[in-house]
Amino acid sequence: MKKVVSVISISAILFVGTSGLVAANAETAPEPGATCAMGTAMTGGIKVVKKKTYVCMPDGEWSKALRKSKSPLDTEDMWVKSADKGMTAAFGTISNPTTKDIRIIGVRSNLFTPIAQFHEMAKDAGGQMIMTEKKKGLVIPAGESIELKPGGNHIMFMSLKKPVTAGTLVPIVLIGSNGEQLKFKALGKVYAGANETYEPSGMSGM
Ligand SMILES: [Cu+2]
Image (cartoon, rainbow, N blue to C red; front, top):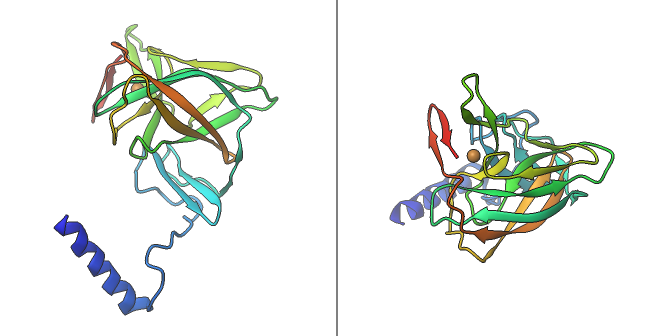
C-alpha cells in the first residue's frame, strides 16, 4: 500500500512539473497498430476513449477505434466453471442469425483481470488433444451457431479477481470486431473436468 501511494505522488509531481494541471489520468487513444502492453497471445486491456472502444487484439496490437453498438448475436445456456482462484473457462452456445460472419475479438468481465483467450481443442499429429489459442478471435459464421464446451472451443479466463461460486451469475461482455457488444450472464457451475495448466512453453490439460 505504501508503495502505491508513493508512485502516485511521484507521477502527480511529474505532471505538475511538465505540463501544469493537466488531468493526470486522461486516457489517450492508442495509435492504429500500436502494440499492447499485454504483449502477444493475450486478449485484454480494453480502453474506452471518447465513447470509442479499443481492444488489445490477440495478435498484440490495438484494434482500430470501435463505435459501440449492440451485437446481433444470441447466446444460450452460458455457464462458467466455478473456481476459487486461478483460471476458469466459459461455455455455452453463441448463434449468429445475420447473413455476415461476426468475429469476436475481446472479452470483458469485472470478475476477471482483463486477460482472456479464445481456445480451441484439436488433435495433434499423434492423435493427442491439445489446446491452442485462436489468435484471430472467435468467428461465428453467418446463420450458424457454435457450441463452446469442455473439450472443445472455450473462452479462457486467465486470472480470477474474485471466486466464481456455483449458482451465481457472472456478467460477461464479448466485443465484436466492429464494436458490437454482446452482454450476457453466465451461470457458475461445479464441473469436475476442464482442468487446464498453463505453462510458458505451451498449454496442456482438459
Ligand atoms: Cu483453455
